[in-house]
Image (tube, rainbow, N blue to C red):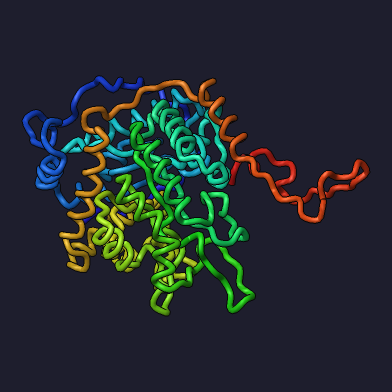
Amino acid sequence: MRRHLRLAALGAVTALTVAVIPASAGTVGSPGAVYLDAGQPVERRVDDLLSRMTLDDKIGQMTQAERAEVTGDPTLVTRWRLGSVLSGGGSAPTPNTPESWAAMVGELQKAALATPLKIPLLYGVDAVHGHGNVPGATVFPHNVGLGATRDSALVEKVYRATAEEMRATGIPWDFAPCVCVTRDERWGRSYESFGEDPALVARLGGSAVDGLQRNGVVATVKHFAGDGDTRYGTGDSGYPIDQGVTVAGRDDFERVSLAPYAATVQRHGVWSVMPSFSSTDLTGRPVKMHADRDLLTGTLKERLGFDGFVVSDWEAIHQLPPDAPAGTPEPTAAQVRAAVNAGVDMFMEPTTAALFQENLEAEVRAERVPIDRIDDAVKRILRVKFRLGLFENPYPATGPVGTAEHRTLARDAVAASQVLLKNTGNVLPLRRDARIYVAGRNADDLGNQSGG
């Protein structure tokens, strides 16, 4: 049984001095194993590696911790056998440079390769309209602006540039694109959506997936499903809020909310899906998406044929019953069991990774979580790592960010995103003596105007 180990979140981390090992460092692991043979089919490699894994190995692959929890002591990556590490918004190494990012990822990868089976970890970050955690990286219009362009080729170029700047800092996994369909602009995250037309969102979302995955970065379509169509309150008094309830019949839900996911899974082969904090009310009883087996397993995996992995949102399982709606600071055994059995494969537990692992192991040993479900989750994660080529090239290499070419592309995207509004009531042109009142926190905030 694992020992429950919690660490207080670390503050700023001093600059890492580890040298970045080049991508040509060679294959990891012991010679002779089938899973280390790049010439073997991916599924055969997955099956071979899975057959060698202990329960600790498997649970480790299903766990994702925040960088601030492990960069001060990278041996935790080894001891917890972590499958993944992420940076939350604003979580960055010191100094915040491309070289420091690559050095940090390299150090954590070195710790992952110190595990018995030497399985490389997958580092993830939110680069939702450019690699915005890195100073000097190119910032592009957010999805609502790109949606206004109606230009699939441009969207693919933007996400390709984002992938190139991510790889320049050693990061191969993007928690993007958001393919929600926003149905009411009062929803506070409307800027994350390409628009209100499901066909447009599906088309541009697929281009975004291609821009990332054709250039060495795992894409994540989110937030599955219905977060852009949430309602709050009763009758006509309600308005949409983040993490609310999507009230829709099955036909409308599939036509509006589910359509972009079906397209990105079946036409573009997306490798990762992130469920929403929100709930659906398809049967007259709201169900949190992270516990919705009908949608995560029955619809996404079985009917749509999704063969990648499902990653939870930030501490999202802490909101599952019986602790909803306020949630809990730590994941309970019941929440872990509900999410795993519903179909979540990897768990974003930024500061509670060890407790998550302890709870999941206990649930497996008590046979409340079937080992077949664990094996399915791990196979999905390994399948993506093999497809990405992590076993052959686990270490990052640095490169340029914010290039002149990418900044030109960003300017072109801004120009293309401009929308001409109808001049109802002859408001324009404004009188020379017109008095205009501009208010709100976005009135003079370049950061917010750049998106989100």
